[in-house]
Image (cartoon, rainbow, N blue to C red; front, side, top):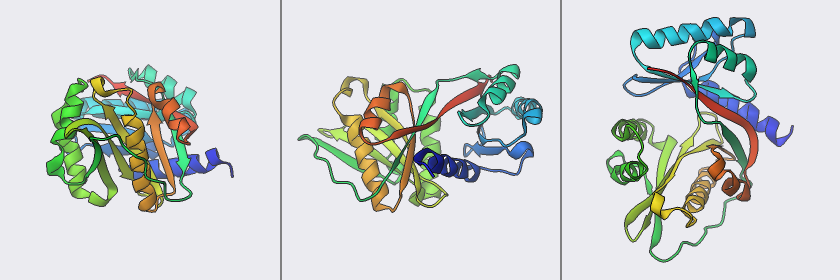
Length: 252
């Protein structure tokens, strides 16, 4: 099997295992801890049923008053899925590239400039600096996001850690690593840098830090959803494009 074929199989296995399944059309839902937000990460409905399944999911979100996002992947018969979502009133978000890397051996530790260090947060009580970085970027609903992250760290501490980069004890950038339910698979997410600290190699340093942790934890395959702004950095580190992903948001 090719690199891309292996990654697509692992990605789809992880999508099936990531949330709550058993719904019509093979729907798998990821819920926020308070069930105010729902993200559909997998759907296996045949083409002729997709429009009905999409309309049903939108109706549930309206009736139960939760925010709904549907993640579409490039290999998900995407033309049919996108047509059904647009027809039901969903709005497309930014297109991202799913990149993957296979870790063959523990990665060497890269050096950091004087005064710069990376700390790993696994305690929910130590997320204040992550929130500060998000606020500096103008992120919405920082409090809700922080609560969800704290819950994840509390409920499954071995499945997630947060890396925070500091310069002279000031939080400058952060990123998460999630260990999948499929053995040997991990995902990078949440890479953020304070605007005034960009173009200093902090994003790259955090990717390398998380890859070292993944290798030490026995992960062999790591993937990440990347916007164009980070694509070139990740490919220089050895990541390769596997597919694409795009969120479709049902307006509240």
